[in-house]
Image (cartoon, rainbow, N blue to C red; front, side, top):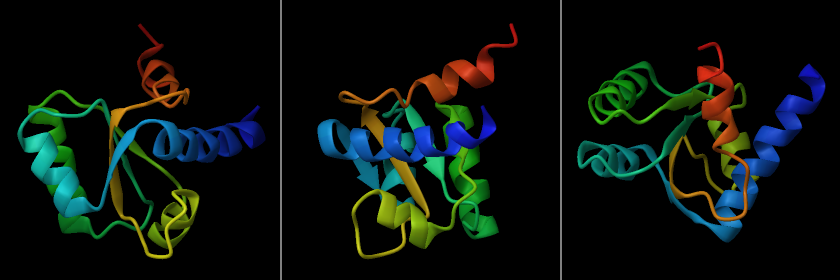
Length: 110
């Protein structure tokens, strides 16, 4: 089950980028979550510490869940189909993806 989970996350991110509305980049992500917009933040495993703290702080204030992916920002960029690193992305609309299941899995303990 663990092995499959990583593939599903990458596929869900790519599907959200292709069929939904996703904001790429930490600066733009922070700008949107400061206004309470978005459903889910995905951050790369190697996001700079100061950016990670900012993203998590504003996401918490706006009650937007944050998922820390284990891949690097360069790999996250590739998953999104971009030739540049993506340290953070914000899902505004998941489109046809099942990315919001990441939130349900985390909160499933209740």
